[in-house]
Image 1 (spheres, rainbow, N blue to C red):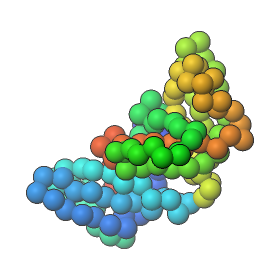
Image 2 (cartoon, rainbow, N blue to C red):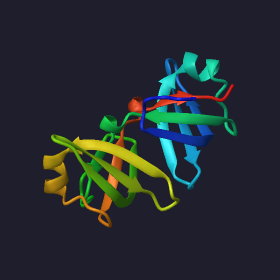
Image 3 (cartoon, rainbow, N blue to C red):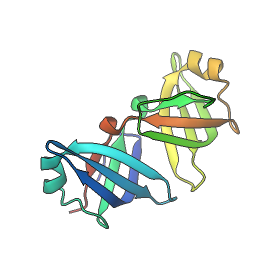
Image 4 (tube, rainbow, N blue to C red):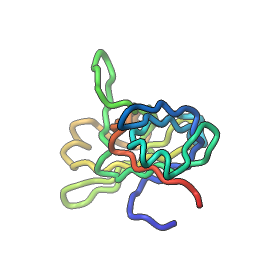
Length: 142
């Protein structure tokens, strides 16, 4: 499978919470981290999602927000993945920042160079990747 999304996470469904219209799907990634996605019930059925099944989570890098201090900030985003910056590639306006989570999973984010400077993003800096559950596209192997 080739896709343009920088973040392609392989995982196992650990929980599926069905609703009237949407289902909340929890994936366990290879490194043990959990990722929560929201899909329609129709999509959950057509992908045969169930606890124990394999799935892929796709997230475009610009949809990944970064934060460097958690303090008392409360967010509505379901996915807050703490890690360390392993690389920053500067462009003219934007930069690609790569975080490595404790289990080895890499998360790619595209942010402005201004954000890189304001947040002090550099290799070795602790940061959190923030991903809304509704920004995750799920797929299943055929």
